[in-house]
Image (tube, rainbow, N blue to C red; front, side, top):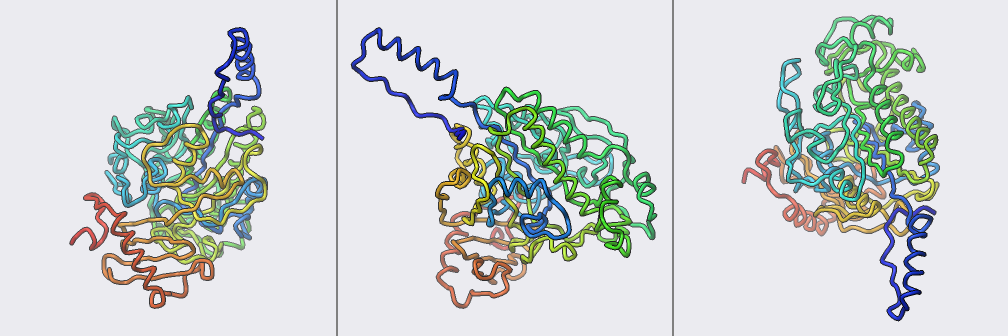
Length: 503
């Protein structure tokens, strides 16, 4: 079995003649060129955007086929209690890249630099240069690094781009607002815009009616160049170019985040009966004649893209030493025409995006590597996205910078999962929430703006949908949670946490 972790030092006996020593050196050199010194592990970390816990077949989805991702789960390892680092885009990405939880991370919400106009500045609050990212850490041991998809941690200004944070190659969206359309007028190619043949215009429109003809709708609102086809093509090219080098690909797709858009031929794969009425844009984003079918088409296209990445690895002969991870940045959304109830998108879990209840933050997490990750295994130990820096550092043979995570490498290798005392998450936007997971229990403050004294306790083993509040019965857990909340929350002037940072 391929094991990417570096070997320990090989000790040569002290009592050794010069002739014997030379023979040992020759033997070691030969071994270094053959089986003893194995090549480093490649990593493709795929993070979907607003994908719910229940939107994959291997997590219970019944209406949307996801055969490629399901195959990864069957041939790899599936985690049942993996959490995003936050419940919206930018903070999750910040914690993923830096290994810092949201009580310590520099970015804790979606703080924008501009609006949705074509002349508005691009970008969100930028990740500070002082923070070391996964990509910077892996480059210290020879990795080629790339991001394909959405950055969301700054704009095009110097010091804010992915190339300023350890990525050799970037193709996609710098700005989250620009990513509200899947048919943009351009994508960033490193520091230069790559112009696309699309309609443009606002990604947020309301109409009184919309054509039922998909081709006409596509011509009116979309265009010719589906962003994800371009992004996939670039990722495949990077794999082919770097197959002789160890590489790290952060595949940060914006599917299935609204707006609801997909190529018409993909939408046609799903029943017309699903959509008795169109979506006219009343709840944000672009109108759509067949919203449910389009949402299913987006996830199906994502699944197909994952299959294409795997096929590329197999054709290039590097599948056995490439780890594919698949997860999401937060739970399914509530706007843009997305019908989460129809698809049971969050798998019966409570809450959606922008909530720290399970439906907003518990995510699919699948790991696949034929020679490394055992097939058909399920891990129930809780892990979180800010564990990824520590985990990939262990697997790829580098020492991580200071971080808040624990490594899930042993769980990926089929060994005893590493235990943790707790998971900490805070979210300053919406109602402002703070939560801690302690074993099978979760303690949550759901409204730090209007009702800061309210605390709820849930046993997720027996009550994953968080229906029965055990706060009155578990004062011990509340006391422990209060201690953790106080210790782990460092106030942020940019992202104050409800009344806590106003005292």
